[in-house]
Length: 155
Image (cartoon, rainbow, N blue to C red; front, side, top):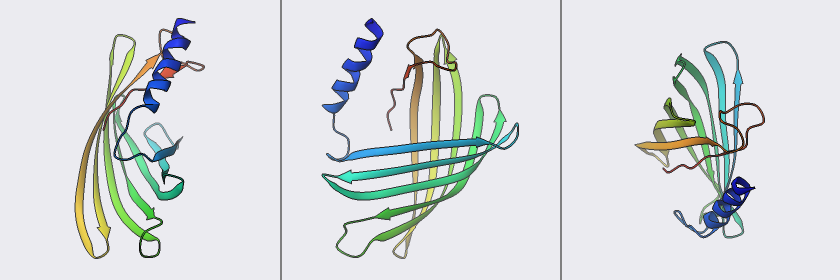
């Protein structure tokens, strides 16, 4: 019961925080294993600015597991920007991501470094991001099928 109260409290407090603007994000992550080392990886995000659809992020890529705790993903991304002064603007990116994981007790730590090469309206530039996050099991000692977990992150 204490864990449920903690999760609900944290979810409520997250509504009071602001990042970038007052819009909302929705996300879907997908990974399909093709062999012991290769997987198909995809991320699909939608972003609302107030009540209007503002952006759609679609990243996909081929993931290679270098080791049990280190993987690399490379692939294309297409970002659509809606409700601009012009018509819908499309931005293209090639991205690669490096993910290192390790455990601290029962907590699974993840360190994600993402590099993106952007082509948009005749200009090119690079973006670099580091995102640490953790998987914290709430109803079991380890992450396993059926585990309820909390994932704090910052980017």
